[in-house]
Image 1: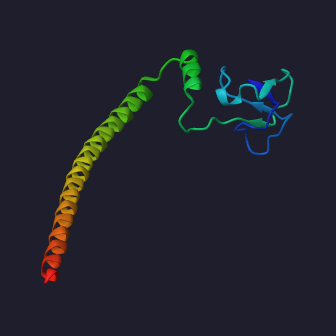
Image 2: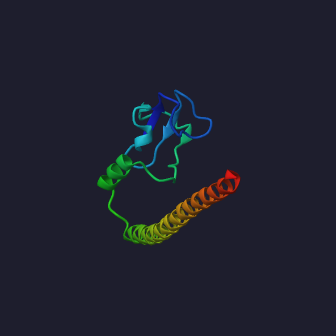
Image 3: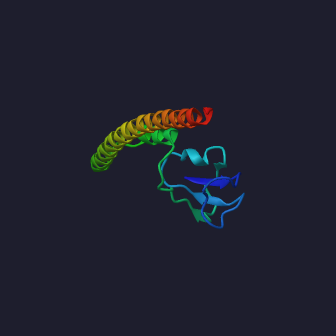
Length: 135
């Protein structure tokens, strides 16, 4: 589809400006372009071609694209595989975090006991030094 840029704050092709005619592939306008362009005249000359960005899509864009296009089974399998790997990594990180929290708790207890022993020893030293000074 052909559109005319009305707002520059979108990932437009390099060199495109407000008023430029851009060819956007597909029948669905990506969410990042909504409100930033208007349909171009059918006879308008295309000056730039929009190429979708590959970073993680916005959820709304994903829903629109999913409703507009059939799912690619290979892409779905690849996404499921990536999701499973991410979940395994998250489980491993949760396990490591729990172990680290246990170590912190044990070290905190050990530190508190050492502080208590130190305070007790300081009290004993203070008491012993005042006993000899009484004469």
